Image (cartoon, rainbow, N blue to C red; front, side, top):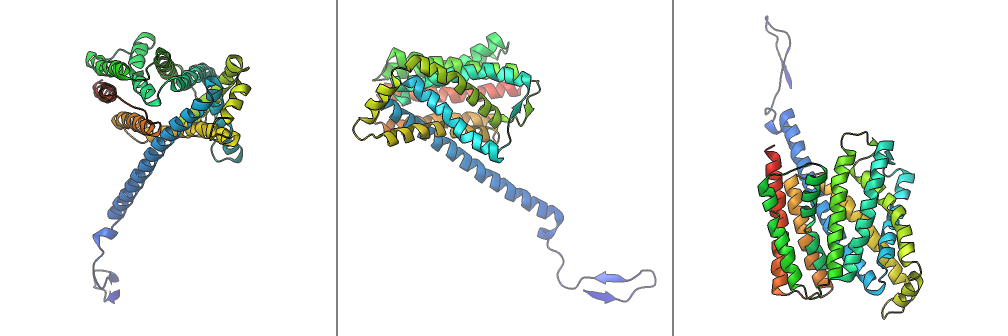
Length: 349
């Protein structure tokens, strides 16, 4: 920098020597660079969340089935998995890693009702996975949007456009074809999976009805709301398991640890890990769904089911007939089409 002599009409003038400032150094360019860096970071985080969501979901389905294969006390397994959420959450709240949820009285009343559906929905889901192939259960569970659409119309008065309902036909057809081609098909497994669809669809519909427009309380984001629902569901499921299977638990446990290659530590660890997988994959699902558009949600959920179907079929060497594969593909594609059509018509409102 050098000083030039002042002119009569001006004061002291400062003149920069050397090159002019680069455009990359201007405030606007710096801000744009920061935005690009943040976008890249968000994309990386989203990718990691998707990876964790899928991996933990696959881990849950495999660990859950491994336990049920030797310890067929379905209600007890379901209740124990929910208890793990307490062990996982309470220390985090106590040390301040995550904020303590403080639901309002109205919200707590609503969550108590929702937790009833969540608890029994989890019970029958575990039952269905114990009674049949995990891959087949997920094909049947692809029909959950059908139940949600019907229940929304009946109880919430939410009637969608006719093309949205028509897009559900491939889902129903795919589930029917897959059921016809399932080698290990049982009506008990099919019925439990369908009951799971009904309960979880009801949970979704009544959650929206009960909690919309009311004071939710403090620290009641989506993750903490799910935490409270899970903990309340535990209070429902533990007594239910004791009533349904109380006298069977100890003999079944002893028989399980006597199985070849099984020990008490291995069984207890696998059961505990299945509960941890269950809770954490739902946590990551909430994180993913909070970062992406509804269309991306639809694609993500469909891909998730396909990943689980393939992974569990390989893990348990589940044979699938050509009819079963075709039905599964139609059902999964149908769910994706339904989600996309629903969002398209929702955007026109």
